[in-house]
Image 1 (cartoon, rainbow, N blue to C red):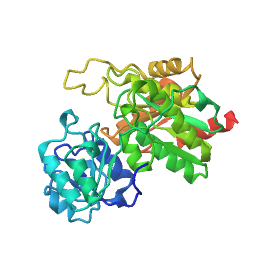
Image 2 (image 1 turned 60 degrees about the horizontal axis):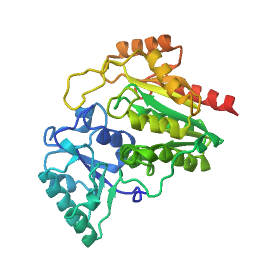
Image 3 (image 1 turned 90 degrees about the vertical axis):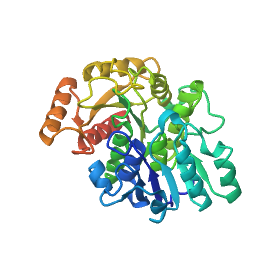
Length: 356
């Protein structure tokens, strides 16, 4: 479990702060803005977060690390992934400064900062906590289908690609369902969701044999005090790099229903290590079939709604994309951030009632 959620964060997003390049930073700003004091990014220094992202208000973007710490930070949160997943020399200096001043370090990198010979040792010497969100818990099980036995209604987000909104829609739906009075838990399966929710397992850091087991364990834990469980998806079944994680989650959480997420303007799997796009995203109706067929041998399930990410479209084009997605699939569709989450909330509530 992570440290108590009382910290005030300076977010490091140096050189990559933007709508599509700083997912962790952006989601933390969207869903826990009261705990963010500012963003460190020399590229956009002097701007506000609102000017860079289109949301986030007057939170400052600063180009001097120590000035950022002086905004009242009690912790540093790494909001982007450096090239190659390794800590650049400059970053090490910033983190060393933060630790020396007693600030916690929250990181979602595959490289565990707490295990670093220099930074980890310094943190232990100073009594400073380092939260490596991707470090998996010990003794995860091999899945055996127990997630299908819970009384709660389990909804899992799946996607056409990475970074299309699988986590975001679950947080939006969690909030909307709770407002309607439903006992709902959001199950985080990635570092950003863990930062927001306070618990979870970053399944992309789990040994392959235990990915489904991690998903199963998360569902069983959430079912202890929830009637509706929203499991965050990862990757895509058609992604050449991450499909294994996607399938492990799908089979491990044994969902009663799926929500398919897609960025309306994306035609190919996004930037794949600098190569030209080469995996074309099939039509939404075909993706629905792909996911339902993949799930069926373990736990038959249905896609009950379409979540579109329309951030890069005009209002009129976004509404048109939502309409076309609904017509193409025969399913309720919306962009729950830009428009109303109600079509998807209604589908979940109806499904949960029918499953009783």
